[in-house]
Length: 215
Image (cartoon, rainbow, N blue to C red):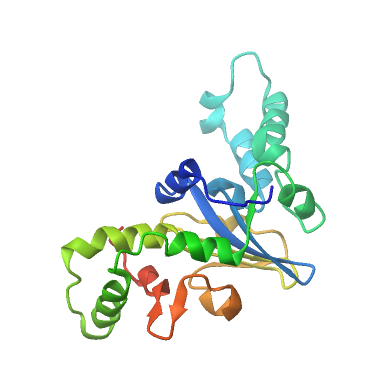
């Protein structure tokens, strides 16, 4: 589903971290996709299988279903019936109702839409904090947190079989597709400069927000 604008409901979902932004490379094309965080898990089938095979998860087994029926139901219910997001089925996911495809200009407009004059000040304070360990003013912490929410959390490259994320406390890399390289870590350098919607000038690059842990 192609987005023409960011609705207030979608914006709220992004700020609450229920919806996340991810960058995809597929067949020499780039895509920004906004979706439920768990849908960026490339191989949920591995998690489903682990749940069905581990007796400690049997307490979640719906009444009236066998383990095999539960396995089938979970596979059908996850990501519109796409538990394993391979390169072959990515176009079906991209064109479905769950994936919301945005362009860089739309995301840049959304990212800077709240600027009432504090963005440049925040950028300076983040740089100083990283370089000199200075304290960021309390009134700018909330803005930094909001901007962090609007940054991409996933990088998925089908052409090179690379999966990266910056979601703290989660191990999505553990269920990357077989044969892929997966890691939790910084991936800004992997995204073309023309698609870095969080950068407005040489003096304002808000990827620095990913360097802070108190969110």
